[in-house]
Length: 127
Image (tube, rainbow, N blue to C red; front, side, top):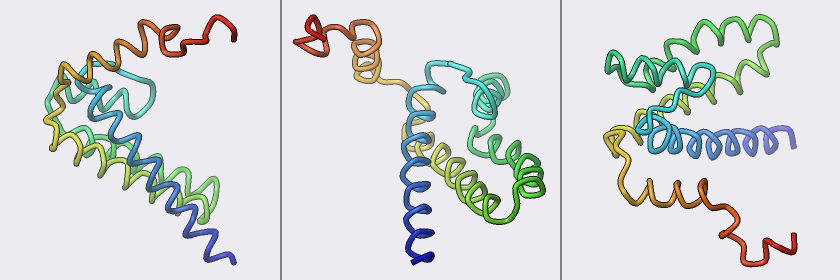
């Protein structure tokens, strides 16, 4: 039962990092939005120096991972390592596939969702 739970947790980490990597590579980096933490630092370095954000994130995460491992233990450290490696991988992969360029379609969809949320739900007045 413990093995099944671990496999499910790794699958959740895989899915979550895939979605986050896609969002970072296709929305955050092209829009030049520097979020907080490691992702924000990687975004700034990408736009200033041009280094691959996935590799920059990995380079920053390594010392943080070693600190986490020491503080929280091996079990937490394993999940953190898997998440770190996968997020860096997905950001690099989606970045290479999209060249970190925002298409007009992305801008239209994102702008519509952000600018006019009340128009997303026809019954918004009743909520």
